[in-house]
Amino acid sequence: MTLTGSCMCGGITYAVEADTYLSALCHCTDCQKWTGGAFTSNAVVPRTSFKLTKGTPNTYDVVGNSGKVNKHSFCPTCGSGLYTELEVMPDNTVIKAGTLDGGEANLKGKIDIEFYVKDRPTYLAAVEGAKQEPMFG
Image 1: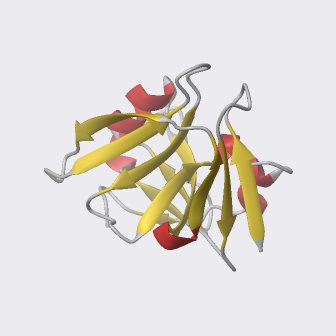
Image 2: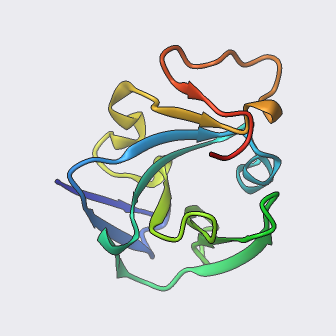
């Protein structure tokens, strides 16, 4: 299957060739700062399947709780967060679901896993059926 996506202004576009992806919410404080919200919603795909098709994002590196680098990529024009490459997950790219085209931000209506539920705001409940991880992995 081919997934495509872009930033808000369309200056950065990407494509992914993958049969499946892991749908994940992350409630860590890094993701909360990254989005300005309570969590990120993500499609985790093999890094080798992810290709930029237009533009060059800016990046911002943060050292996560693991002590390893989280490289956040975003549009230098509109500021949309696009994807993250985590040293702790070197074989995957974590696409911010809101940047996916064609309604894929819905993540096929199913969340596989929630990370950093220890940081999940108390006003949010666990997603029914999703694996619950206190931290990462």
